[in-house]
Length: 363
Ligand code: SF4
Ligand code: FES
Image (cartoon, rainbow, N blue to C red; front, top):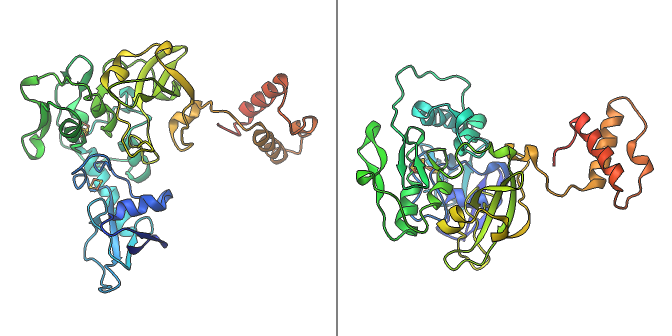
C-alpha cells in the first residue's frame, strides 16, 4: 500500500495505482480531467495531456519534486508522494494550454453538434479554456464518413484520443478501423471505408469524448438537455441489457449505456463492464422492449439537469421557496399552510409555479 496526498487530501491506495485513479478514489473537484484515459479500456491514456499534475514530493524515501508536470493517468503513486492538481497554478496554466491545443483543429460547432451538453471537451473548455483563440491558421477539415449504416465519423471533431480504436480492439471480434498517418495528417479511418459492423461497435460512440463518432439513428433529433433519460433493462443474450433510454415526448429517440461518476460506462456489481450490444442500442426503440426502472440520476453540474425531472423532495423544495421569499422581501411563507406530509396536487403545482418564478430550484 502507498500513502499519497493529493491537493491536501490523503489516501492509502494499493501499489501500482495511478495518481488519477487515486484521485478518483478521493473524488470531488480534485480529480484531474481525462480525455483519453478510460479505465475500462486497457492501454488507454497518455495521449491528450489534460490530466497533468505537479508532483511536489516524489516519495517518502526521495522527497525531491519531479522536475516537470506528469500525466496522472500513467504515473503510479509512491509511498509519501505529494501531488498538486487544482492547488497548483502551474498545472492550471498548463491545462489551459492543453485545451487550447486540443481546440486548434476542433471546430466550435457546438450549436449543431449532437454531443453538445454531454461533451467532455466542451466541459473542459468551459472550465479550463481561454475565451479567445490565438490560432490564425486554417483548421484541418475532413469529409464526414459513414462507417456502417448506424455510425458517422466526423473526423474534423476528433481529438485522436484513440479510445474508439481500443473499443474496436478489445470489444469486437473484427477490428477494421484505426489511426492512419502521423502528426497533422493523422486520422481515424476504416481502411477503404469499410463498414464497422459487429455486435459491440456502437460502444465507440459512448467512449468518444467529443462529437466525432455519433449515432446516425439519433443525429439532429433533439438537443440532449430537452430529452428525458430513463434507466431501463431487458433480458439480452449478448450484453448486460442495462441502458439509458432518451425520450422525446413518448418516443425513445436514443439508447445509450449507463455512465458512472467519471462519465465512463458503469461497472456492474460482478465487476463486468455494462457495455451494450448494437441490437439494444439501435434496434430496440419501443417502450415495450424495456422494463423501465425510473429517471436516470443526472449530476446538477450537467447542462442536461436543466430539464431534470427526477423525483423532487417536496419538503426541501418548500423550505427553499420559503428561504427565497424571505430574501426577496419577507412575504408570507407559502409553506406555512402545508404539513410535513406529502403535499396535495394543487399545492404541489403552486410550489412548482413559485419555483419557476423564483428560478430557485432545479431538480
Ligand atoms: S473518433 Fe472519438 S474516440 Fe475515436 S479517436 Fe477520435 S475523439 Fe477519440
Ligand atoms: S487522460 Fe492522461 S494523457 Fe489523456
